[in-house]
Figure 1 (cartoon, rainbow, N blue to C red):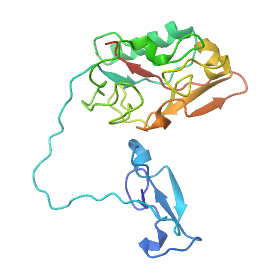
Figure 2: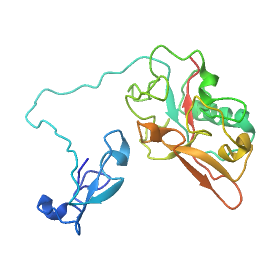
Figure 3: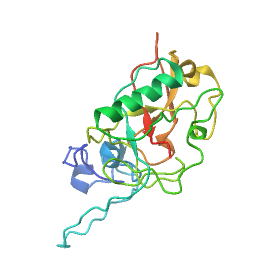
Figure 4: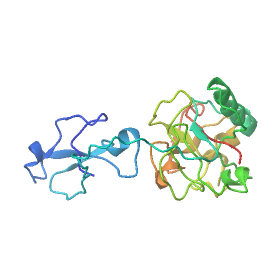
Length: 224
């Protein structure tokens, strides 16, 4: 999506010379239509000789819009977590975050290991999508999305990476290097982008360090 804006939707100086140039020497910021937070306006840029889509927003509609709150099991994005204690430690981190936000219910971390796929921890899957803490429906299978899970218990909309452990939540980790040694602590893991409502949301990239997996977020869905 051609935007020409920064993370906040403000002019950023990369806009094909005010949308007048089609030169390959000029650039414009672009967004992702499946993205939340900064992804929908400004994850990267492209040259001005490349065609792109536009967001088309009506500007003469005067009726106030009141967002509807969906019902269903809750899901949130955790505070940064340093993998340790395997799945028990990750689940405890989700529950600690829920407690800090006065959110009741049982929550687990959406993580794959070499012996279990992430979604197997939540079967049977709910009949309705998991709902963010702002009332927006997200997904019921992490394949088809209505919105990203990028809201924390503090109400912040975060463009963070979230641990995954596999390229699909329906798959087990192919190796311990995909899951920080099954979340006991290791050198690398597969992660997703929590601001994305696409295949980038779960396990699309990997990270490695020289010593240990760093602190990244967890998807914390409520157990149906």
